[in-house]
Image 1 (tube, rainbow, N blue to C red):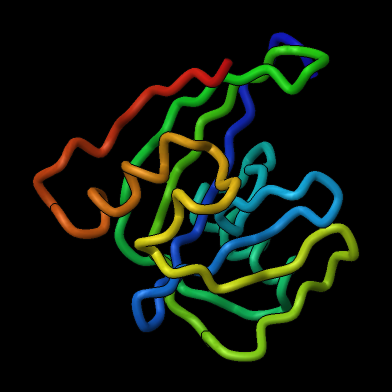
Image 2 (image 1 turned 135 degrees about the horizontal axis):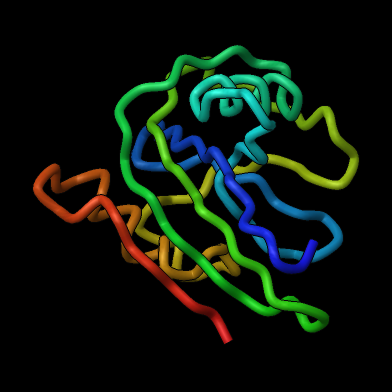
Length: 144
């Protein structure tokens, strides 16, 4: 929808130096699990709901990791979104998608840059936010 800013709750689940990613089967890119916050819903509640809908697992939200303001063009129109990232805790095995257009994969955190991971700015920001509690928790990125 042009002229709107999407609010997205994103979860970061790390297990044995690997991070859980959601992968689009049609567009061939990966991103953090989660999704849109609905009107009247808290960001943490939206994250728990989205993970339950996508994977069927109930998670707990942990620490706030950061906020990425992101704008991009998808080939048709410009988009603007706010990605709010939290650590999540939950079952880390046998994670199967409940939605036919996505699946879930484990990716070594150190190799995020070797895949098409969106938003691209998180390739550098996410390890900083996870490892350095003194790092800035806000970033703004614009993709061409």
